[in-house]
Image 1 (cartoon, helix red, strand yellow):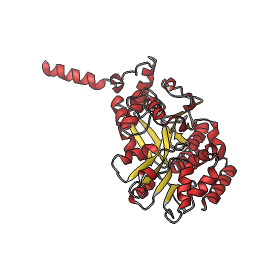
Image 2 (cartoon, helix red, strand yellow):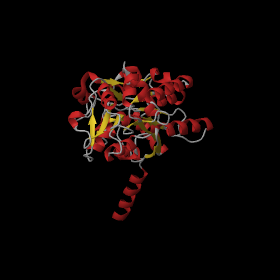
Image 3 (cartoon, helix red, strand yellow):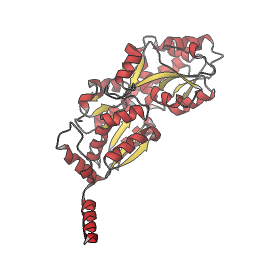
Image 4 (cartoon, one colour):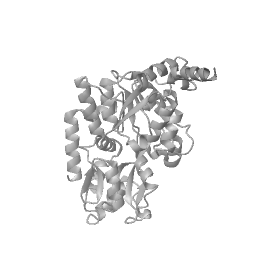
Length: 362
């Protein structure tokens, strides 16, 4: 009798859907349970992302713990690879990502204009209005763009504290900085192109400063990791337009890496995410996007992945309020809106790259 009862109990528990263990988040409408149930039947969500797998690991673990019936299939790519792969798959009608999550804000918004599903996240009231575009594309982070330098070869008290100071430092001693200055290759990195365009919009002395920074010759790369490695080793002395989130995470365990936050202006990047309109796992995609924007998800990003939160209610200093208290009016968030698309028009993009190469001496 006892054996039969145990068997019956086990059978009933096994028959319950995983969604029974995933409660509707506080403050969400009760009908959100239908999204959870449908997502559990889908069983997985496919994410195309430029956030490296190591940084995203805690977020993935948190999501799969909250929704144990849903597996995250995470694809880590650079911004140009993501764009080309996604647009090719959409054109061919083959399987693709259910969610795009990219640091290249302009190319992500370009994809969103053609392929994003409209979805009003229950979390959107907790993030800035400039981070939401037409209930389709969402900014998800608040990441200052910084300078990095080898602090064994450049003393901290001489590190540049503005774009003008960086340009003057290099121009004053081009022999010392010959092929020792690194930044993004704007032809190969979508993120690098976008940041350079934003520099040109914000900095009234952009061309002059770029020419000064390039006085000894620029060494360009397609990834932040490569630039940090080269500066840390001393192969390069200094780098600019570096994601502060990655730099801060590395600097915790790398005493050779110094970080400088410019005082004239600090671009703030927000990784853009959207749900694919024709995605195979649309409900699981909604859960993922909402989780990334939620207090739980943003807390994981801020305190475990070292990626600053777009919200202002996260414990610790690594959120929008903490960044504002530390860096003040120098912060210049890049809005998620149509202005991002201006330089993606082919002729204008090619002309901008041509002008950049001329100013940079490339």
